[in-house]
Length: 185
Image 1 (cartoon, rainbow, N blue to C red):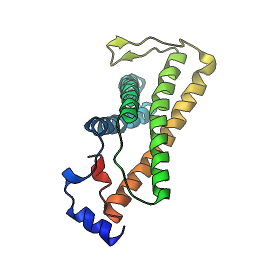
Image 2 (image 1 turned 120 degrees about the vertical axis):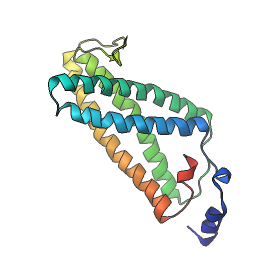
Image 3 (image 1 turned 180 degrees about the vertical axis):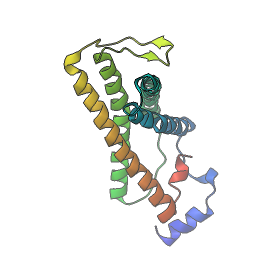
Image 4 (image 1 turned 60 degrees about the vertical axis):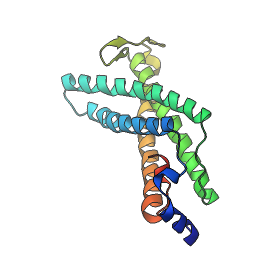
């Protein structure tokens, strides 16, 4: 960051910083909170007693299904609203676009693969124990473990992407001391 950029950042108020739309910001933080709740629940399923595991599983799957629908809305918002312009080295811009694109991909692939895996194992989703969700594939043991594998790998890839994303946020906010973080707050 040049001295001019630092002075410009120091003189900016949060109201003068180019920001994402209110819808984009709200959906970003809702998905972040849901993922931060859903991911550990999924991890804990294998380490709990069967009775408790089923409760974790119901909440994990229900929250994951909610993430899917919110992500689809996010894609719509992304396609219909403009992201604020951000100056920076081209390599940073390419890295940001790549990580964001992969985050979107895996935040959709992960709940889809989990939902289909559950169906393929013969357990249709009853969303939060209230609404039975139609099973598009039904019990299909031939592909159940493949779908479960895709879901598990997606979770670990998503965790890595999340780490890259947080690392970039910290780099911009603490090291570069620019206004990048404020665009999404």
